[in-house]
Image 1 (spheres, rainbow, N blue to C red):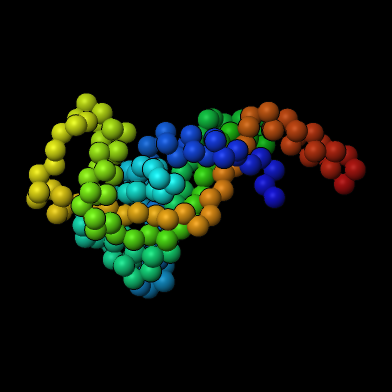
Image 2: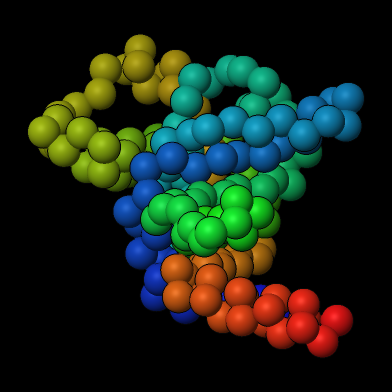
Length: 169
């Protein structure tokens, strides 16, 4: 059990507000391939856009099992000793199954959501057919989703525990 789990509503807030996610796929050589991506969270799924061809899409076609991660760093929590510096953060880790979206209506709905999130001044505009053909949309069906955080106040608690260990250890 994680010491500082995120509540479900906080997980949804991060998935809705954060700008960059990291998609992990597996290449044909067995190595992980991690890509920073723009994304939207809608209908309890993650949607990513990019070119209709490339390494991440080839990996997904070969093996649809993926990992997805977002994080938000709040700052460093420092103490007198450099080794006692920590980071206050929130993060979400998702395991899921990715597939390419082929339905044009879903593709357009995802593109509209992406535009609304990242460049709202362009909301409501249409997409040229050539652009729609060149754009790949990945849908991640979430199998598991966990979130955790490390609040700044936890550092004091941690130091008190270590001080106890140093005295009695």
